[in-house]
Each structure stands twice: as structure tokens, then as C-alpha cells.
Image 1 (cartoon, one colour):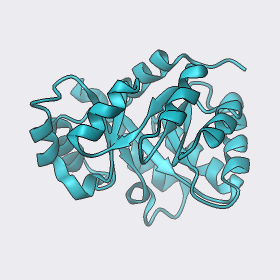
Image 2 (cartoon, helix red, strand yellow):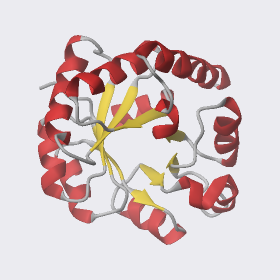
Image 3 (spheres, helix red, strand yellow):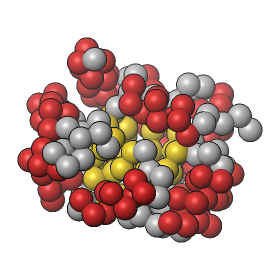
Length: 217
């Protein structure tokens, strides 16, 4: 199986810095969501390991990216241990996201040259993650700390690449607030899909956000 290197994945994430974060137990529905986001310009997608059939659904999404979305970078989120990291990597995960930071998951990702995005919040946690090799650290939950916190930690951590999930709204105003605070990548979960009755609605919601982000470069 062809797989991008961890550095290539990180570069792509930074180029397309809006990452939908999504879980559903039905593979067909999850595929429809991925297609809708892809049609709107999304090129990095995080499926989360949060419920029944997550592994089986991920396998179907990995097949979809090969056939229908060849330049989509598909990753897995909500990983707590190396065993889960290993099996999702074997199934095609291009990156692994954690809500926490664990050394065994870091090591598993490094063995396969797969991008690892651990979760952290405090300065100590962020720094510890970078010492384990993280090149991108997820600030979670973002709604607890807010953009002002990101501004504050940018003093002692000026160059660490940061992603935020939780508390990001699918609006230009929210994206601007986080990006200007110093965030490099935004992950948006339920807020991106809330109230969307069909694929066209999701595509229509995603497309202007992606265009907005591209215009900021």
C-alpha cells in the first residue's frame, strides 16, 4: 500500500488547514459525508474511533479514497493505545490523532513513518509531546481554553505547530479568531455537520470555508 511520509502528510495538512472530524457507524453514510467534504475542497479528513463499527467503517473509507478521492489524506482520531494505532495504520490511516499523549502510540506511528498528532493543553503537555517527536500538537478541547490562551502560549512556544478542535465554529469569523491567535490547523466536528440534511448542504458549507482559507495564504 502506497503511503505518504509523515512529513508529506504534515505539509498537506498545513496547506489545507481545515480538517473535518467525524464518526458514524454506517459506512454508506460516512462515505457520503467524505464525498461531500471532498467536493467542497477538503483534502484532509479525520474519522474518529468513537463507537461501534469504527474500524470496519474506516476500512470502507480507505477504499473510497483510493477509488474516488485519490488526493484525500485520511486519518484516524481518538486513539489511546498502540494496538489500535497499528491496526488503523494497517488499514490505511495516513495520520493518527489522540485526545491525549502516549509514548506507545508515538512509537507505533514512528515505526511506520505515519504522522502523529497527540492531544495536549498545558505548556508542559505540549512540550512533552514535542519531545516525543510530535510535529503537530492538537489543543483539545479548544472551547475550554479559547483563542486568548493560544495567544498567551505563543510567547514561549513560537514555532510549535498547533491544531485546535472543540469550540471552532464553521464561520469565517471563528476561523479568523483562531488563526490570528496562532493556530495552524483547525478541526471542526459536529458544528460542521449540524442541521445538514443532504450532501449538497455540507458541500455548500465547506466550500466557502476552504476558499476563505486558501485566500488567506
